Length: 379
Image 1 (cartoon, rainbow, N blue to C red):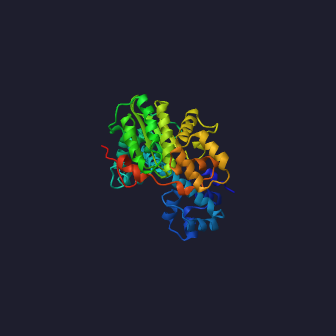
Image 2: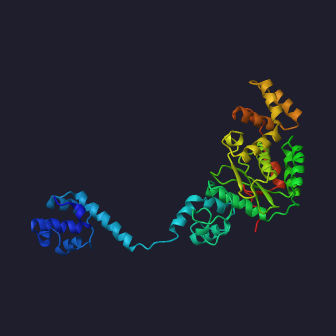
Image 3: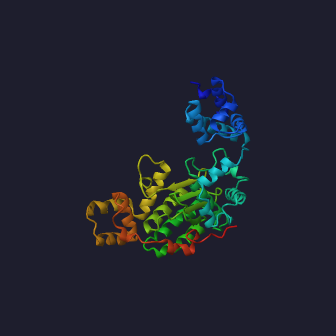
C-alpha cells in the first residue's frame, strides 16, 4: 500500500493512487460522478477534501478515508502558517489578561478604562500603572527589567497590589522619620490594644513617626496580608490588606510589618507577607530569619510570650470564657488578641471566634483606604 506519509497534500496522494492504477483524472471523475475540473482542483489543492469525498475516494481507491482527511488538515494548517501575520504583542497580551485581574483593577479605579475590549487603552493604562513605557516592559513579564526590588516568587497579582500601595504612599504627607520616633511609637500603639475603637488612632501615630501607612484591599487570589518597603532611606511604607477583618489579625500583621521597619528590613527588597494566618505566622525553622523575628515581635505585642505560655499551661485543655476575659484584662488587651494567640498556638482556628471582633470600620475613617467601594485619592 502506498504510504500517505510520503505526501504533503491529499491531492498528491490521490494522483499517486491514480498513477498506480493507470487511471486519468477523467476516469476518476466519471467513477465519482463529479466534473473533471472539480477533480483537478482537488488534486491541485484548490478544493478541500471533505468527509463525504474522503469516504467516496476510500470506496473507489481502496484507501482509508482518515488518511485523506489527515493530509487535508495538515495541509490547511501549513497554509495558515504561511499566510499568518505574526502579532509581536500577542504573547504579551495573553500574559497580561491571563495574569492580571484586569476587570477588577478597572472596577476599583486602578486603570482608567471604560471598556475592557479597548485593548490599546487597557495596554497603555497597565503600562502607566506599572510605570513602564509599554506592556512589554511591565514587570510581570519574565524578560522585563525589574523596577521594584521584590522577591522573584511574587505573583503578578501580588505585584499589582504592591504597586497600588506604592502609588498611594508616594502622595502621602507624613512627619519626619527617625528610628527613635518609630521605637517610641510602639508603647503608644500598645495602649490601643484594649478596644477595637481605639485603633482609629493608629494612622496618626504612624504618620507622626514618618511611616506612610495605607490599607489596600487585596486582589482576588493574592492571599496578601501586608508589606513593608521604603521609597527611600527615610521613607518607610507599611501596607495592610486586611484580608481578615478581625482585631487579632490586624494587630498581629501591623506589628509584624512595624518590626520590619524597626529592623530596617525591606530597604533593598520589599518584604511582601502572605498567609501570615498559618505556618508562615509562626517560628518554624523553615522561615527566613527576618520573618521569624517579625512574627515573634507581633506575637509578643499581642500577648507577651511568657504570659501566654503560662496561661495555656494553667488552663489547658479547658479555656473558660471568664478565664479568657480575666486574663485579657490583666494583660490590658482585648479578649480577641488572647483568642487569636490561642488559635495560633493550639492550631484550633475553629475555637474562640466570638471574641474576634471586626475592626476595619473603626480604623478606616482615619486611614488612607483603597478598596471595599472606596478609591484612594491619588493622581
